Length: 302
Length: 334
Image (cartoon, rainbow over all chains, first blue to last red; front, side, top):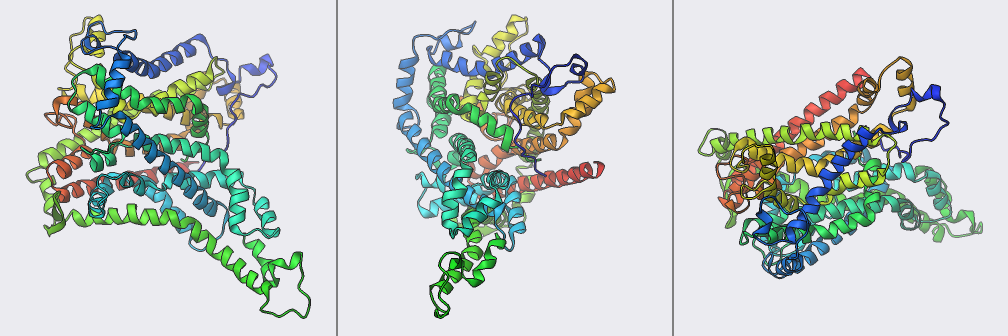
């Protein structure tokens, strides 16, 4: 069911005997020029729209739709960004960026914490009903957001949370994916002997969790934290429903307003897209390796 | 953990400070023992409680409540008054006044799903295969391929809406270089769905390629060596060693992508831009997700929106069932 064996990041450098070389496949072959060209084109296709967002955001309403399209940044970037900063989403992109940071930050902290706790219980503790409960966690992985938005909308209206960031945080305090991810990691990374040793020393569960489980879980916490932050930052359906036309938008709601509403100036719209994506791209540039490693190690569950 | 509870019968503290023989039985040792037993018995439930509380309040309850609402008429502006209408919301969708939109959205969800997942996963498989070679700049290539994943639906869709814009869009300029006429991407059914698939494919191909790559790296090298001894070419090794070994992973990505495609919402919501109608003026790229949003939050028919949501749920259960059957057959054949 699950394959999360940590995979080696580098091809093994065994001795290169010519007779064996023919039998080498996968990670062992040196890639030819064609493979490099294809991968280079794929990387270009991945990065070009991002680069072009920057170019478009630095032009003006005429240049951005001229033919041939501009390929180098113009001189209007700062002006467009300032305009978006003050005007997008009602109160400006600044508020939206702050809101998204608060929501994604809170969701990340609670998701990671609760996922470690529940993941630890599922991975290493024995208790009645564990199998059924784990099955329940797994079955909720596939329940789509659409199924809960109408009742949640009614609920938030009744609770008076209609314009409140809490409405975006509460439903996703912890996710099934997080619990499962941590369970997979901890069942391998946390030696049972270490727990028993701590028990024999008289440590209660709280001390065991604080001094043993959390330190061991730290690498997986980093990965899950970043995946959760990205997902929360980019969440669209629920924020659109509960915060639409709100004076308290997230970045995605502000961008949606920008794209469907008052502005027909593409250089301004792309400036908004740039500003809403930049924080994540920054996180990505700094920690991208960890995210890549996290996906290649933890996310496989077939 | 149960193994460590055994000594508790004699008191967990017995190891270091054995109580004197005349100690009173209800002394601190017994109290600590009781505490310890409570700790080992109760802690697991305390640890999983937050997840299940959140799930009950924001997952299970809304799921059932949506089902209940789907048999009622509920207005967006008076959410506390629900009027029982029986199966009316469902019959409206299947055969009634909005059936045209429903079947249209179902078909669009299907065609958009195929257009946006099949080429995506095939490309991801090919790219993963290439990434598995020894490469120059492998770290850069991996990170570059994953960069679109960090871009939000909203930002990506807005930028691609400009690229596919009929007035001065880059896609039409590019076609013009080859003498092909300008396409009004957003207006046509096929062309708009193609453009939306490009957005989905752009965002998710790299992510899936990395998942495949991880699975490929776990394939035992001996399998390749044996195949090579049998005279298999690299292409034959890919077909007869890599792909079979990746079956569970491929199945997993197919399921996840299918679930994602069934819920497609952000891209068709924003692709029309200023045209003002989500899903296209002629509903040419309206998905079930858009239909649900439109019925509930534009037309104020929350009951009908709930019915759409439950139909989507039924579709996903069906997908899950097919998944389970295929998995069982895969297991049996191994």
